[in-house]
Length: 111
Length: 118
Image (cartoon, rainbow over all chains, first blue to last red):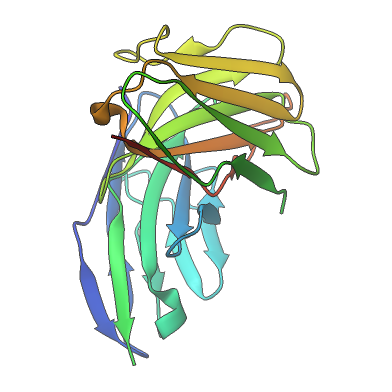
């Protein structure tokens, strides 16, 4: 079956630090990969996605590259801000459109 | 992006009562809606997938008689937790998607409903 494993948190960073959240997946086919963000008190929002190998998704300074050879989709941001404090979820979806989520990583950015 | 609302945002009920949660797509027609459950500091677990006008498909381990899902229109799905017990206390989240053959399409998430059963 499909599964997503992502880096355990919590992660605490200073403003302008570099952020990496590791995500690896197991899938039977060729899934689409997603990163969702959940800000405090809000619902999940799609941050970025990639639908095929070597695609790079990017949004709000965040990037992730679909690496089929390593079955990974690591999230990176070069300089985080306090407003990036949130829970980040890696997820995958195959042809049935159902999403399988990782456990989530809580990121706290301190001023 | 598309907007999905949930009502109520939080509810407290007594053990043994039933609670209905609504999920609405406000500016698009949702052919498919998904219901998730999220425990504190944990990930979202898919409970069921509902397509407009047909019966919901439940994930393994989810009691269909306890969690009744109705998707009667392209903009509304409801989840009813019947005879709720304290262990049903959780954060329930819906998402909506408009499927097209070229998919996969993005799921748009509601803000969630916090259910507390006393």
